[in-house]
Amino acid sequence: MMNFADHTNGQTEQKRKKVGMFMRLLQGLRRRKTVFVVALTVLAGFSQACAPQLSPQDSCNFVMSGDSQRVSWGPATPVVLYVDSSVPSEFYGAIQAAVVTWNQSLGREVLKIGGWTNSYPSERQDGVNVIYFNRNWPETQKRKQAVTTIWWAGDRVYEADISVNGNPAHYEYFWGSNVIPGRVDFESLLLHELGHVLGLEHPHVEAAGTVMARELQNGFLRRTPTPGDVADLKCEY
Ligand SMILES: [Zn+2]
Image 1 (cartoon, protein in one colour):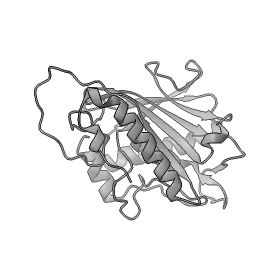
Image 2 (cartoon, helix red, strand yellow):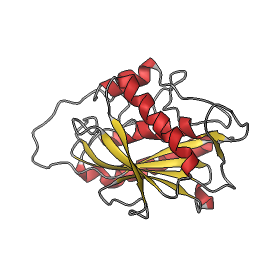
Image 3 (cartoon, protein in one colour):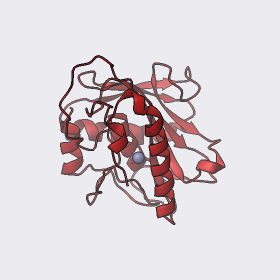
Image 4 (cartoon, helix red, strand yellow):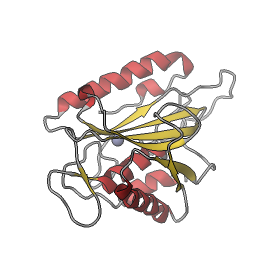
């Protein structure tokens, strides 16, 4: 289960926060037998030591800053993401479809694909938002379908990267209208990861049908956000 108890005490709690995230990940892994994990990595935010005291916000299932504020891109939208050349070109349409789904759900453009890139070879913080396909995904992480990493300062995200498990020994994918049993729907996966890009966490309580649910089963289509998913995002966008 996620809880935000260790997200609330600011800068001095960074180490505890990382340990807390790790423990929750371990607990999550132990909780499942058939594990299909879509993961979120949240990296350090920086609180301002002399900032005025802010009233705590409702999380709306967002990552929360040390000052109990929702972490988002705020007015800095659309968030432009580039697709690394490691991503098979036939997946481009599924990525674009997931982007369009969020934009249409919110009634405005919050996400945008800038095109292909090969200028940012790995998912480190480099000032550009990139979607990668990692064929050398480590065995120790093989239950994860993807990891989205966000970087923020204060309560504003300034970079996000999505890395998809492209190791065919772990997962294979399908796209388009024909479901392939035993494979993961790439569009559903990207819709989820793009929710993380915008700042959403896995929900504390998974409402039926939420695209932000922690697990995505093989052969399952989850291409439409629930009204609750959209309401969460509308807390910030
Ligand atoms: Zn996730």
